[in-house]
Each structure stands twice: as structure tokens, then as C-alpha cells.
Length: 455
Ligand code: TRP
Image 1 (cartoon, rainbow, N blue to C red):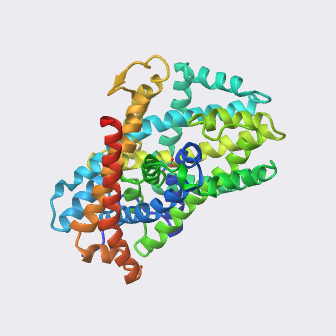
Image 2: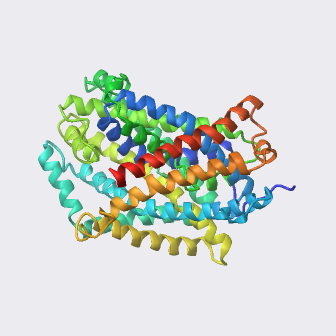
Image 3: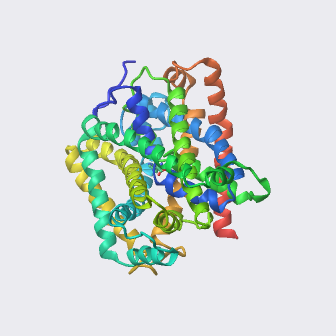
């Protein structure tokens, strides 16, 4: 069969795919979420479980998504349909693509709200708002911001516009150009902040906290958190890697690429931890502070240290870049679908979908003020979006992708896409994607629901 071509263009090289996929995976998940869940779950033992989840579940499912995307060369909705047809299967597998696009929308809504906070903090650090401030003062700034819908809407709107501008320019002129500037800056900033953490004097304690495994601190729930986070941080389960894979050159090794992306993602998460925890310990703050770790604890640390204003500014700049390059991948599946399906330009598709995501985001940001008591299943709208995506739609999407590629897709197709990878690697991957990944996800999925609704 003649190879399909994407109408949206393609990455200039395998390395551009790697940078774009790394841009998608490295985000708030690495810098905001990973350190605080590590702090809440006791440190080293949790990190070890998380690494195992990345290797045994994350990488195989990542590869499965790229196999389908590169075979189909379209948005996940149309790729799933056509690859299923090519495999002699039911075209209604396209529903998997629909579910992913929906999940992307829902994540986008709350992701852009939190990213808005980060943008606000770029300005706070630039203005020196936190210089010499204690926990209470920083907490007051944070709470004050959350309680003010106008300010939140302003930052949320700016962030949505930033994302849509990149998306509207298309693959080569938009995503690829942006990634070429953002990713090197991101790596430089991570290194700078690591060096800063080295000078604080508590570097050793931070590293010990991250790497000394004490399994007595590990609960069953921590294992669930670790696996769920492996999905979120690698952008799996909603078609982001599928759509990026559809722009990937045919001659690139899928396994090699997946391992590089997962490796870079993990490095940034660990580096963020090594940059953050020394500051926390040097200032006698609490590593288990939860979601406020980045927005309250860390500014207190920066506020009390020499050079803290500059490095605080660089830190939040780094987080904005990371969040920006992630958020584009949340919307690309829907944008690509709309351009394929209707006679609209990319600009028009971005305008319509961006407006939709923006409105949904307004609902999410209202959860912190005027809509605090609009409850769905006992959760405010922000928590609802987070819960439904991270705990339901992403694991379900990942599970179905693994099952489709492992069991429904004939080996001749997956083998063909993986022709750059050696036979032993292929067999190992098939084993992981057929058995290990589905079983692990199923266990997490059921346990998550159980802990939420039955306990
Ligand atoms: N991986 C990103 C982060 O860690 C978030 C993200 C982007 C994502 N695209 C995704 C999560 C798709 C799940 C699915 O911040």
C-alpha cells in the first residue's frame, strides 16, 4: 500500500518530533505536580515506583499511540477509523479519538487556568512582590488572586490566546518554530535553577529526599498516584502523541524516540525536584505542602534568599514555557480533526475551538470564587475536570489504545511501523502492550474508582 501523507505537514526531522513530544510532555505535570505529589507521598520510594510505571506502562503506550498516528497520518479520530479499517476492524474505533479530543478539551480548560496563575507569578516576581514575604503574605497574594474572577479571566485569556496563536500557524510555522525556541530555553533555565539550588547549602537533603527509598512510607494509594501521573506527564491517553506521531517521518525508530522523550521528561521532573526541595529545606518549609508548594512555599523560599527575585522570575518563566508547549498538544487533535472534516482554515478552527476551551476554562476558574458551590458529584467544576480526565478518560483511553494495538491490530502493521526496531525489542514491546500495560491500568482504574465512590 502506498504510504499516506498528512495534509497538515510534517516535522522536519526525527529530532523535531522528539522536541515537540518533549514539549508536550514536559509541563505543569513535571514542575508543579511531580514535586508536590512526591512530597505528599514521602519521597524516594514513590519516585522509584513512578520510574517503573514510566518504563513498563508509559513507554509501551506511548509507542502504541505513535504507531496508530503514523499509520493513519490524520487526527486521532480519523486515524483510528482508517487504521481500524485497514486492519479489517470496526471503524467505530474512531470513538477512541472522540473520547481523546473531549479529554483534551477538558484538560485544556483547567490547565490554562493554572497556567494563568503561572503567568501572573512571572509578573509578581518581576515586580518583587514576594521579596522578604513570609508564608502568610504569599498565601494572601495567592488566595487574593484566586478570589478575583477578573484577574483570573485576564490571565486565562492571555494564555489561551498564546496557545491559539501557535496552533493557528500550523505544524511547520507554528508548533515547530515555537518548539525550536522554547525547548532550548527551557533546558537552559532548568540547568540555571539547578545550579542555584546547588548554592543554597541544602542540596544534599533535597537529593536524599528524592532518592532515598523508604518503602514503609509507601501506601497502595501512592502506587495509584504514581501510575496516573505517568500517564499525565507523558501526555498519554488522549491522542496528543498520536497526532504528533502523524507528523513523524517514516524512517524514524519509534522505540528509540519514545525512550528519549520519556528520558527527557523524567530528567526534567527530577531536575525540578532537585531544584525545588533544597530551597524548601534551606528555608525550613514543608515538602508535603501539596498543590500550594509551587505557588506559596516556593515564593517564600525565593523571597528570603539572595538573588531570589531574579531566580524566582526565571523559575516562573520556565514554568510558563513548559505549560505553553504542553497546552498546544491538548488542542491539536481537535484542530486537526476540524480542518480535515470541514472546509475551514486552520485559523477558523483555532478560533472556534479556542473560544470553546476558553468558555470551559471560565467555568473552571469560577470554582475558586463565584462558582465555589457549583458542585458536580460533590466536586467543584475545576476538580471535576481534573478527576474525570486524569482518573477516568486518560486511563481508559490508554487502556483501549493498548488493547487495540496489542490485540486488534495485525502484527504485520505494527511490525511494519516498527521496522527500524530490532526483533527482540518488538517482542518485548508486544508483551508489555498486550499484557502488562492493560493489567496495570485496569488495576489503577478500578482502584481509583473504588477509592472515590465506595470508600
Ligand atoms: N504532559 C503535560 C504535563 O505534564 C500535560 C499534557 C499535555 C497532557 N498534553 C496532554 C496530559 C495530554 C495528558 C494528555 O504538564
